[in-house]
Image (cartoon, rainbow, N blue to C red; front, top):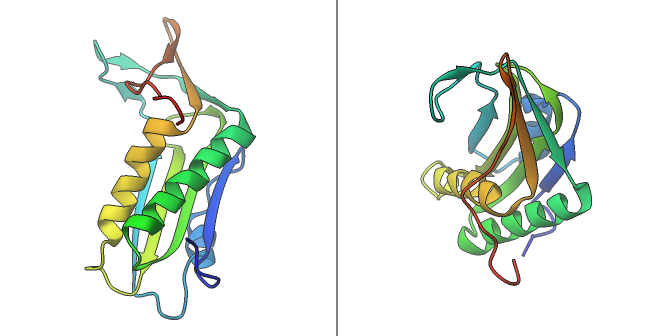
Length: 155
């Protein structure tokens, strides 16, 4: 349940992620803590044999992905009633090494009210249920990178 003054942002975008703007949009006058996770494109990937990544290509079916992002935000709110603001943003398109790809931010009045745990839950759950596809392109070819999660009925 989202309280009227507790902002929630979830989006799929091709735009550069603006941490300051996102944080401003989920910060209230009562906010004293923010926990932020940002995933980035690695130039060297250690999955299997270490190899160079020239760029990643992210794709998503926006309506479905954003609906699942809302589900993640709702789950965070159900588990941590102390969370004030939530931002869940996934970037799509061609992204090069050192580029932020995903941002999860949670705000709360204090650091010891679950804000760290909520942000960690947000990125873990996003990776589980939000349908975003990633193709890794390197000097020796390209490969679709698959996650470990297999959806259960109703998810």
